[in-house]
Every structure is written in structure tokens, then in C-alpha cells.
Image 1 (cartoon, rainbow, N blue to C red):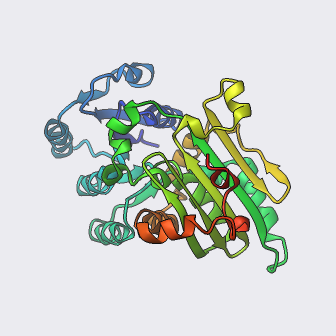
Image 2 (image 1 turned 180 degrees about the vertical axis):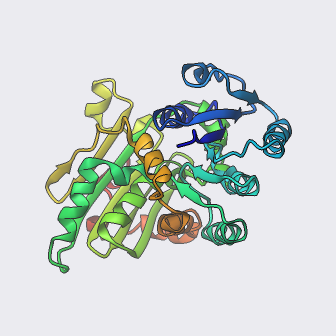
Amino acid sequence: MAVKKFALIGASGYVAPRHMKAIKSVGGNLIAALDPFDSVGIIDNYFPSAGFFVEFERFDRHLEKLRRTGVQLDYLSVCSPNYLHDAHCRFGLRLGADVICEKPMVLNPWNIDALQEMENETGGKIFNMLQLRLHPSIAQLKQRIEQEPSEVVHEIDLTYITSRGKWYYTSWKGDVQKSGGIATNIGIHFFDMLIWIFGDVKENIIYTRSHDRASGFLALEKARVKWFLSVNEETLPQAAKTKGHRTFRRLRIGEEAFDFSTGFENLHTEVYQRVLSGDGFRIGETRKSISLVHDIRHAKEQLIDERAHELAALSKRSHPFLRKGK
């Protein structure tokens, strides 16, 4: 089998090394990488011969020159800021390559339609990194829920706090127009997982949404979910602060604490293996979670304020961290 040729956009980002490792692990070759920032020495650990560019135009010219000389790119890996994903996916399809894109695939559900139209026009495919679906504990949970009677509805408490410094708010991640906000940037993984396991969204209530936190209630087909997301270390539980922890992750299903704190090491590689075998996660599978975070982002502020005042009456549908005023 011929060695698959990859290019990567977003080489200096947090998640890029996982993609480089995955490309190496599946026997691929990274022939070119792009990032406006040049702190990308990590490439030497995997593909020291890869071409590197800080300007998109030169990156584009290089790949086009290779194409015209018979070197066809097989895959473009997209690890760029969220708001650029759909543009970079289109770029990959125009090059004649398939695309492997980080989450969130896009910021708005109608962007999915546009990308699917371009897939049809070019014959290319776009795959998304829904790697939590491959986590052994999560896959086992899904299998368990599927075997339960249809009338069983679970009570779920989802808490994810990942402290970020002041840099976060200056970077593109702190700009809701570029990242999609807290629910999109750090919540999309969990929302996709919950919808995949517990079914479609029936009701979506937002209690708070700000630059550093968001919280609400979801009614799914087989679960009622109270969720709280934050990048502010002040929202950490006191026990976590005492231990010096800056991250707190908890998923409680009824009285059962569901632990998936380990087992992430090779999930990106597993996604790449599935893509190369023709069984990757296609763009349509992202629609439900993208639609959900879009609705969270665009919920009316007045309605959020009104619901926030009703927390005492709706205590069974609001997250305990929110009720405590954390």
C-alpha cells in the first residue's frame, strides 16, 4: 500500500501534536504544515523533513506545485482556530484531498450544509475527530444504555472546569465570534458524547452564559442533564483548590460517578485508523451537537436572566454549582 501523504494546518496549536503522532502511527507522511506562528519544533519529533510555512499563500502554492508535478495530497488535517475550520475544509477538498478536521467542525449548522454540497461537487470526504466515541468506557456506557428499557430516563450531572489564565481571553479562544464561546470551545466534546449515548435534544434551557462560564439543563430522550462549564479557577470546588488542582471533571449518572479520566492517549490515532479504513466519522454526524451549541450561543439574554431568577423553584433542573453562586 502506498504511503498516504498528509498536510496539516495549525501546527503550533495545542492539539496538533496528537495529529502528528496519529499520522506517524498510521504510517503516513506529513509533507507540509502551516501556522502563522513558528514555535513548531515539535514537528522534528515526527516529520523533520516536512515543509513548513507561516503564510497561507506560500503553503497553497507549494501544495499546488506538488499536485501539478504528480504528487497528490491524500489528506489535509485541520487544527486551526474554530472559525477557520470550514474555510480550511473547503481548501482541502479543492486540492483533491480528503479532510480530517478537529472539533467543532463548524460554528453554525448551515455551514455543514455548505460543506456537504462541496463534498458532492468534489467527490472528497470530510471527517471529524469524535474521538470520545472510541473511548472504551464511553462505548461500554452506550451499549449499556441501548440495552435498557426505552422508558428509563437518567439524571445526569456534568461538570467540567478547566482553568485558563488571562492569555485565554486575549487569544482567539476568548473571542466568541472565533471560538463559539465556552459551550462550543470546551463543551462540544461532552455534548456530542451525551447526544450520541442518550438521544436527541428535547429541551434546552440556558441559566447562565458569559465569557468564562455557561450552565444549563438538557432534556434528552433518555436523560435529564444539568451541566456546568467554566474556565475560571474561582469556580473550582474547594477540595480541588486545596489540592492545587486546576481542572475538575465530573460526570455523574444518578448516584454513579462515571470515570473516563484516563484512556485518551491513542484515541486520535484510532480515529485516523478508522478514516484510512473507510469508517471515519462523517460531517453529518456533527449536526446535532453543532445545532445545540449554536442554540446555546444565541439564547436571548433576557430569557437567560429570567431563568436565573427561577433557580430556587427549578433546583431539580439547575446545576448545584450554579445554585451555590459559584
